[in-house]
Amino acid sequence: MKKRLLIATLALLTPGLAVAAGDAETGKAKSAMCAACHGANGKATIPTYPNLAGQNFNYIVYALNAYKSGARAGGQAAIMQGQAATLSDEDIANLAAYFSSL
Image: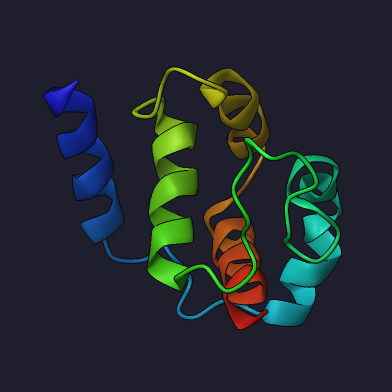
């Protein structure tokens, strides 16, 4: 587990992994895939799922990269790993920009 966390942390520190601050408008368009669980405006419709509205930009980038790399496991991680696997670094930055702006 510590090894996975270290890998995810190192991945975040690699230049170019998160594309600057991202583009919130592009992230909004991409966020449709998140709405079923996290709500249309980032407010979860399911009590056990987190709200994304107003979440810290860097945290969203970290979390999505951790799901994408498999460093986050357990709970509903299998769902998020599948979703994150389809995201580019630019998609992640754009989604983070959008949700953190709400």
